[in-house]
Length: 340
Image (cartoon, rainbow, N blue to C red; front, side):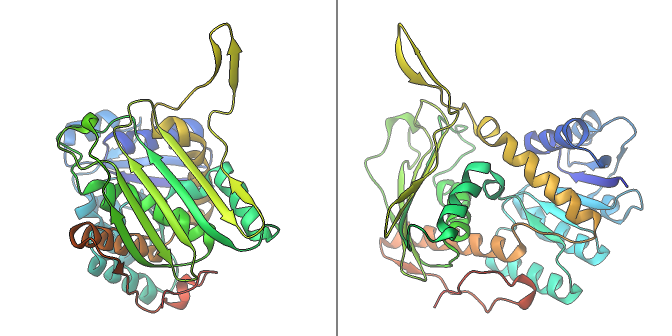
């Protein structure tokens, strides 16, 4: 059986997901697209797909079984609520929504529906290296994780489009989510420190050092540098009671020749995580075909939103900012501890 998917938003990530769904994966067809730019939607639409005038029309259409949301963040809440009302599984690129209040409204709607329908696009959970790292931590041979170091480096970001708040309310969400997942714990508080400003980013506030205080006592040390110049470099290392577990550098191939020993660095997120993106959609297609969702949930999107909000407060106050979460509904039961 083929899952008929409608894609909302045909910008760079939307176009990449359309390519993935039509050229890489099986058991799925893109039968509808829509975008605020109708010409862009028409250009991105696969042969035979309907170009809808609005997201609401796409969501309600009998031609669409499930939805992929790649629109800009402020539009997500309305589109998610429409998908839930229609009972259609939905994959939503991050951010889930742009406020904690909006996240709670989506949570309440999904809980009232009575079944998970939403998966959030935190692709790192589907990366083979991260999954191996989690298996080591879950296995317990190294004892309890004490410190997790997460490094997120971009060669550059678009001038004028990427603002000084975005390392904390956009980029950080990936490090926050993967830390919660790896450590099976919630984030209880956030601190932010600002080193010397990099001249690579002009007036952009960069880099950032973020400390995530986990409810169970571990600390996550996050470096976010978005104009590092040399490439897209993602690293992670867990310091545990009995040893260290770390991600390998990617790509893993090391070249030795007359010029020395060197290892390539990915140019951007698409190169580093292309296999993770493919895998997250493989698993989403299976779940959506059964009328539900697995993987990162609406609750996980809510948690990431709270972390971003706390980080912005922390950079302004210079203090450790606490995070207060509502009680987790049974629908999102998972092996993570609620922050005190």
